[in-house]
Length: 184
Image (cartoon, rainbow, N blue to C red; front, side):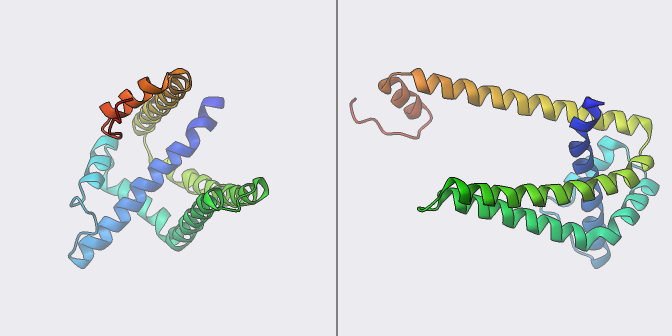
């Protein structure tokens, strides 16, 4: 049960992404233009990797189409809340209370989006075959592993920088091209 709930958001995000991409590509095709910057290559890869049939694509579009405005509104609210939190963190008069208030807005927007994703997942999941669900689970596992590895690298780098002598830190920054030495 824990695995399912941990992967649930990623599953829904992938399903929503695939459905959203399918919808935008279809609308662009109907209009005779492509709204995808890479000519629909991402949509093509999702369709191929998940082995979605034309019928499945149509069914997913039918699930997502009535929710288009609601999803756009929720995405905009989440973006605005995250932007507000960044501003609160960087404000010259930032306080713990102001940052917590901004973070609470992000949490509320994420909660609203999670509920919508749950509703959509319950409609999209039955459309997918057992094999497609397994492919999605494998993708989620790779994403989880990549995120965990990234967190570990960040943690290791922070620990290294906290214990490194000043000159070692400057040498490392020079190697990255982010610092021009001053002969230290």
